[in-house]
Length: 90
Figure (cartoon, rainbow, N blue to C red):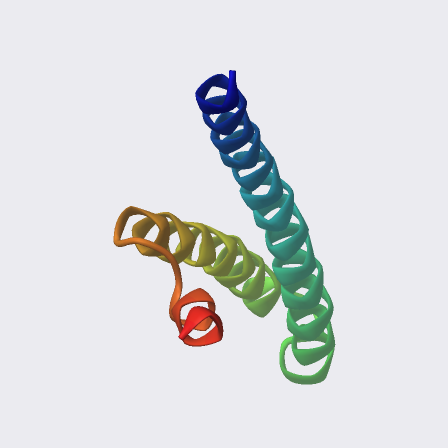
């Protein structure tokens, strides 16, 4: 009975961790894109009043920053947890 409960608890923690990672991905990506839009729009109005060059560049950088953070989190999870988690347990 206790072994089944422990296996079920690990499964629930795994599902919660994956859901947390997905939510963090969408929040970080949205924030990165929003910041990229506003910074790019401000710089375009200042440097290129009739074009949206930097707006597109910063939006793409915001998107890639969200993807990069997701990749780092997945790789840290594969390697046994992030450095923050390891330092807290030691």
